[in-house]
Image (cartoon, rainbow, N blue to C red; front, top):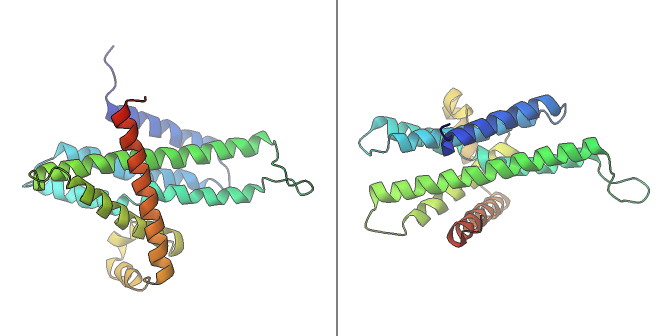
Length: 218
């Protein structure tokens, strides 16, 4: 029996995850189905970007643009963990966590979704960064780190837009002029601080994955 490739393993994994979320998460947590789907799109786009890896290819640059627009959706799912407060996990009398199995199932699915989207999104971002280094700056062996930093910073801006302006990536294609007007109006010190925190968080996830890869712990 032929072994599934890495790409098909991820496709099957996210298909099962989405089906599980659809089946088990009810209102108000059913929004996770859409968010995880949007987070998976850049992972799928990254597969195709690598398939058309030729800097003379229009398909390559078009898919890379689509990946970049949708990539913030992957780390964005981490911010959905704040919605766990809707579960009111502590008892009103003692303040100790409740043992309600339904609550812990929702917790497990939310954490699994955030973990999966952040980890696999970062892996694909790292692979594309190395691909761009190979294609554009092959003489600079560590230039992929510049791409990692840029993509993480841009994703931080995207997370801010999605979380506080409630804008999805698709708005860029539906109403681009309005989208860019919103983008120009968001800059402030609190916004910059938020973006820097999200950037550092993504870079630390990247570093952790790099350490695991280098030490062959798994």
